[in-house]
Every structure is written in C-alpha cells, then in structure tokens.
Image (cartoon, rainbow, N blue to C red):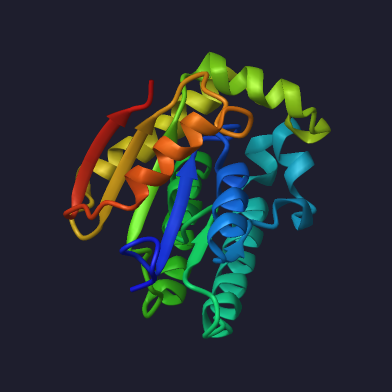
Length: 215
C-alpha cells in the first residue's frame, strides 16, 4: 500500500462535466501518483458523433475502447517504483457502459465480444470514485469549459448516461464504489471541499456502494 491511500489504483469516474480530470490531476500532483487521463481529443469521430450519433456511434466507441485499452496497459506496465499509486479519470468498463447507451442492439452484441476479449486479464481499480452532479449542473459545467464538440450534448443524453452508470453500480459487487454527491461545489477553488474529498479517499471501503454527500 502507498503511504497516503489504502489503494494503489484509484479510478475517478462521473458523467460528462463532473470534474473527473480536474480531481485526478489535483490528486496526482499533491500525492505523487501516476496520472492517467483519457485522450478524448484524439478521437476523430467524436465531433461527428455529437452531430449525428446514430451514424457515428460504433466507430467512436470502437476507437475509445482500443485507445483506452492501449493506454491503460502502457501506463500500468510502466508504473515507477518511485510513484505511490495510479489515479485515472476513467476505468475501462466505462467503455462498455457508454457503448450500451449509444449503440444499436446488433452493434452492441458485436462490441461486447470485442470488449470481453480485451478485458479478459485487465486489472480493475481498487477503488472506484463516482462524482455525481445533477444534469443541469453538468450542462452548466460543459458550457463553461466551452469545448466546441460538446455544444450539442443534451440533457436527455446526460440523463441516459447517468442511468447507465447507476444500473451498473447496482450489479457490481466485486469492488468498492464511492459515490460522492457534490452538485455545485468547486473543489478546485475551495480547498475545504478538496480536503474533504481526500479524507474520504483515505478510508477503506468494502465492495459495493457507499454514497456520501459533500456539504
């Protein structure tokens, strides 16, 4: 175990605009962890997907899956002995959750086969943290950061993603899942909120769901 957290691999998850990357960067910087950030900017299909999801869902999800798998394999294999742990702003199973939400039934069946081949010997995070904000708050955050390819994201789409995550959480029994209700808090600007989050990550959790509201 590392000296700060009782975990060597923490994944920070959440809906689009929840603050996953921001929190992951802060933790890696402050506690010397290896940072793994999703390379969504490299996906050439993403802008087209938001404009025409039915047409571009399969290539966008296939690209994400192969890139995530390659990146996580490289990052985990190259973990330095001088770094205390890995913190990532996604976990690999996210690939299947988004595909289930975005693909047609026939496409999803094919995608599942490919996913399970890649996932066969892939390590799970020791703690999965989910940053939960309401859909209106997510839309506000998305608007603030101003990525042009996200301008067409709808409230309905974000709600679908949210439901997909929580459906998975109800079934997952093999790893600890810490759901943090953070709504409008800004843990980047307000260090009191950030310190609360860190203290929660220092605790050990049993497999299953733990939900905590940050005030």
